Amino acid sequence: GETETWLKIYLDPSCDDSVVVCLSSKCTGTFQEQFELEHFPFDEQDLTMEMASEHAREDGSGFSVQLERNDNDMYRSFVITRGFLQSSSYTLKERLRFTRDTTLPSESNSGKTYPLLQIGMRVRRHS
Figure 1: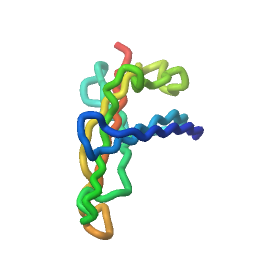
Figure 2: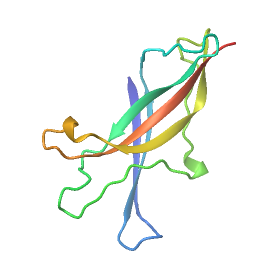
Figure 3: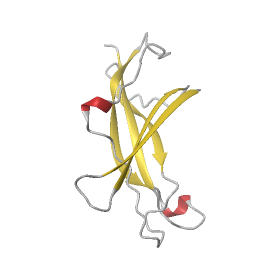
Figure 4: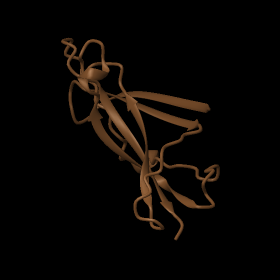
């Protein structure tokens, strides 16, 4: 797919020793997920992407990374739905939902955990 990324680095005004890295990304891609059809014809579910940091949560350096959504309205996240292939049967919501989490120790050779951001898009069957 096609990707554009912008990066802005600034000091966090609410904390003396924190640096904020604001990453904006515009990407076009093809995603697929198994539909969980449980309440036909009113099915709906989240289609989820995950973004993880390459910096472990506890790496001994004192360096800490947190992945968070930006709540500033100037940086609103949205989905352009015109290319959604299932649009004749489903509606893809235009807003994204963000959930912070961590990777599992078993997902790393070192057994470390890494910050993870789950990005969910809601899809609903036309009724």
